[in-house]
Length: 207
Image (cartoon, rainbow, N blue to C red; front, side, top):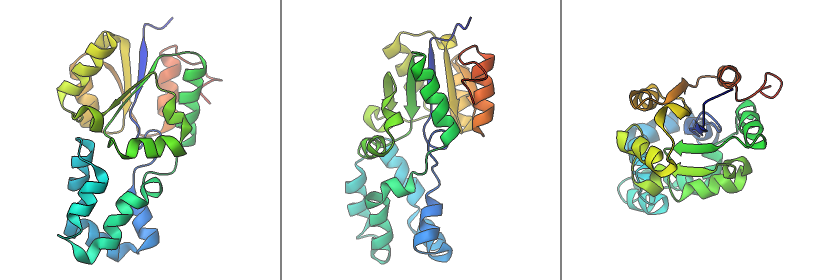
């Protein structure tokens, strides 16, 4: 019998891949992608989206600064569902298996408030969470302890009754420091095995 009251999923590189370099390599070529990422520092700017800024507004603000990369910048917004793709099938099966058993599910994700609904429209499994803790909505970002404290306060669930899967060690460490059970995600099978070990799924359900 498990004492876990909620399973908490990160999204990027847990449920859907977040490797935007792959999209740009396919569309503009690796050399152009490397130059674009280096010259615009686009990942740093994207962190502003995760922290609550508007994605379309940020892109429109960057284009005058980097006019040579106007096309690539617009792709960051216009082709969002090509950047944040594809789904990770085994992880999706695990999410659905938990949901089908009425296990309480949360997402705690660094994700923009504009683009999260875009991903949900393409990936309906992202609508199966009982509670959505989206950094862009909350204007708090992992691994800030405040976002974990918000989850605890909002859900009313004690830290040791939460289990959280994330692919970034710093995010896992911040949760563990508060007493959450954690799983550093590097492959769906490891997460499947952990869910079985915690008594949340059977081996058959976790396939």
